[in-house]
Each structure stands twice: as C-alpha cells, then as structure tokens.
Image: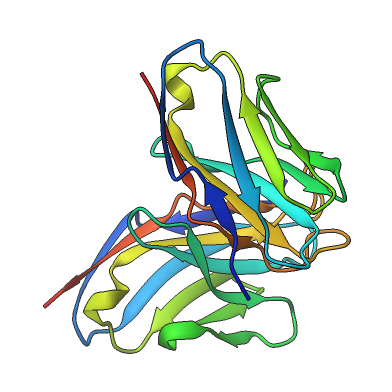
Length: 115
Length: 116
C-alpha cells in the first residue's frame, strides 16, 4: 500500500505571495491532518479534514486554510506569506472515523522557505 | 489540557549501549500515546503506540515503551543502540478532550546521537 505523498517537496516563495500544498492520503484513509514544524515552536497542529469537512482546527490565523476533495486528497493554502511561515509542513492520514484513537501516518513533508 | 514533556533535548549514547528517552504526559483521561521517529529531511515514522491494551508496548526496530500511570510516563527504550538509530524522537498524546480532538500534541523532541 502506498504511503502518504506530499507535493511539492520543496518550495521557495517571497513575502506576500500565496502557496498551495497538496497531500494524498493512504488509500482508504478518510482523515487528513496538517501540522507545521519549526525549530522554535516544534510540531503544531493546523487542521484536520474528514469526508471533505474541516473537523478540527488548531490555533493558526485565517491565512492558513485547507480543503479536502471527494477522493480524500487535501490541499492547504497559505495566503500573504510571512517570513515566519517558513517551516516543514507535514500531512498525516488515518482511517479514523471518530475521536483520535487511530494511528496517524505521516508524509515526507513540504519544506516551505519564505524569502 | 493535555500536554507532553520530553526530558532532554539531546541524548548521546555509545553504539551498543542502552537507549532511554524520557516522556511524561499530562492528561485528564486515559491517554493514547505515541512515539515517532524523524530522520533528517523526512516525515515522521511511527515507532509504537499505547492504547491501554498492555502497559509494555513493543515497536519497530527493537524499541519498546512502558506506560506507567502512577508516574505519568511513557519512556522509550532500546537495549542496544545502533548507528542507524541516530534521529529525532517525538512523544505525542492524542488530544481527546481539547478543542482539536483527535489530533496529536507533540513533545519538543529528543535528538539521539550514537557514537561509534
């Protein structure tokens, strides 16, 4: 079974631009979560989508948004990029249908650099 | 609120020595606990998971962890370190009561170095 895939793997943008990252979950998984990893803040939860609906949201500004498609693929978008948005963005999928007990499987991440 | 504390941001051991990475959690409900490993420029790989079935959990690559409720700990161990174990290790608890239920709350991570 193929793992979680994320595209692109590396991205360089300038301040003020917007960016879209893509995540394809493991086949059959309906939950997709996004995390931001930075040296200063560590791993922080962004949001989770399940069956095309945002089910949970972390404490990030509205510039961070996402969506999920009917095939469970997910995208996250960051508008008006700031230098502090430079991070590794990790996507995780699980077959979870309710409340946080199933294992999350992570993709390799997208390394975003904002100049 | 649930939280995870990993004691020691860096741990160095000699090849063949015992690996012990410490994790303490705070949770008002029975927790679901995880250990993940991250190699440079890669995503997170699950090592093992505790879901209350057994207090001693065996994972991949010879790692295991013991859940101790009285100590609110979930330390990760491996009897004999290998050079390939050098990586960053993250302890996480599943958020079962917070505003983002179902998602992971991570510790700050512990970088493990293995000396030849």
